[in-house]
Length: 146
Image (cartoon, rainbow, N blue to C red; front, side, top):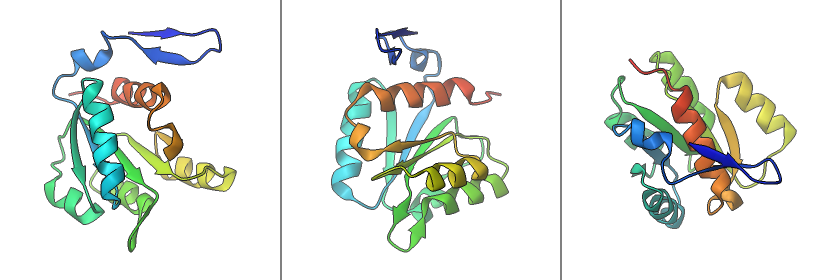
């Protein structure tokens, strides 16, 4: 469940749809250890199951096609591009939603990412806001279960 504040921003309540999808995992893919650690703590404190990886390769070595959840991936990783992960998941016929994390969002990046099929693009400065939790909740709601 969510509620909307006076500004029209949707916030998850304590009883969110995450409780309905207990097996859902939020996969974090970011090469910055401090980002992985802080994001993991934030999401776990919101009641989410989280598994973090330092690279796309590490995530793909772990990933199984029928995973239930969503992926948060940095757009720029050492030697890798977050959109590369989106293309790889598509090639494996995964329907798991991907949220791109970036330092700043440009119209060109958002357009390119959406064309690639990402669920959303979120600025890293919103890690500690309810906006990221709300976007994850929305991604999990749209994930085709089954």
